[in-house]
Each structure stands twice: as structure tokens, then as C-alpha cells.
Length: 176
Image 1 (cartoon, one colour):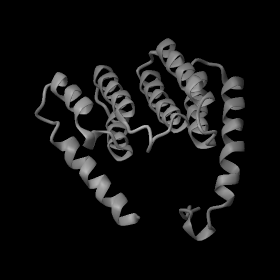
Image 2 (spheres, rainbow, N blue to C red):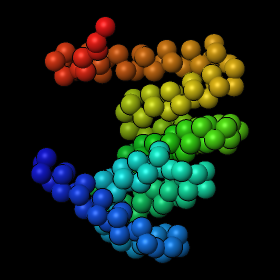
Image 3 (cartoon, one colour):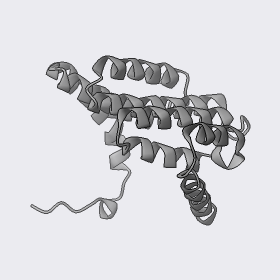
Image 4 (tube, one colour):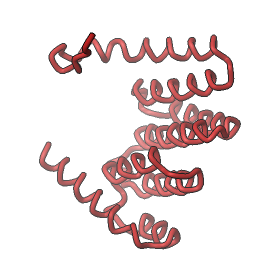
């Protein structure tokens, strides 16, 4: 399983590297038509690119590619609830990029879309925690500190049980 995952990751990165010389239209067409682009590994590559995008327009384009990836995924391998989790994750990352760009209204719109998809998702709490952390950052930047702290408390409540399951020897060591 680990070998297959590593191979899928390598194929996704290789596929993405082949995009570099293409126009945006050609990239979009390739995502729509190429089965190699319709994988969770390729989606992860796009989300990493989205998180480190150099401009607002680049991040919006990458987000649109990511949405196309999810639309192209096989419904048997990616049922509707999982698809909704993936779409929520994309909108959460879009919200974060918009927040960083001080496009606060547009960030809030993206967060609402994320919440809508999460409501129809698998119920996995981790995508919700990520969305709440971005929402908290947005609230804090807008000067709404008590709302931000309330959202962060919700995050803590989600992450605490997860953190308790991690063996202590797997946690990073913090130096005093």
C-alpha cells in the first residue's frame, strides 16, 4: 500500500511538472481530459501549489484546476460525501489565500462554501478543524478576537482527541 501511494505521488508530481510549459487553457484542458490528473495525489500537488502561489490570480487559477480534478474523479472511487470533503478543502485553501491577500469578504464567501460542502461530507472532523482555523485567522485579522478565540477553541476540541492518539515518541521534541 505504501509503495502504491508513493508511486501515485510520483506520477502526480511528474504530471504536474509536465504542465510547466503549457498555457493556462492547455493546463485546464489537460486536467479535464487526463485520467492521471483525476487522483487525490494530483489534487494534493495542486493544493500545495495553491498554498504557495505567488499571486492572487495564480491561486484562483490553481483552485479552479483543483475543482476540475475533483469533478473528474471516478464516482466509484470517490463517493459524493468524500467529494464534498475534498471540495470543502479546496474552498478552505482558497479562503486562506484570499485572507492573506486581505480579500476578507471573498475569504468569507469561500469559507461559507467550505461549510456547505462539509455539511454534506463524510463527517471527518479534520477538514472542519482546518476550516475553523482559517475562519479564526480571518476573524482575528478583522479585529474580532473573541470570535476568533471561540473558533480556535472548537479547533482544539477537534484536535485534542487526535493528538491523544499519537504516541509521545512520534511528536516533535520542543526544546526549552
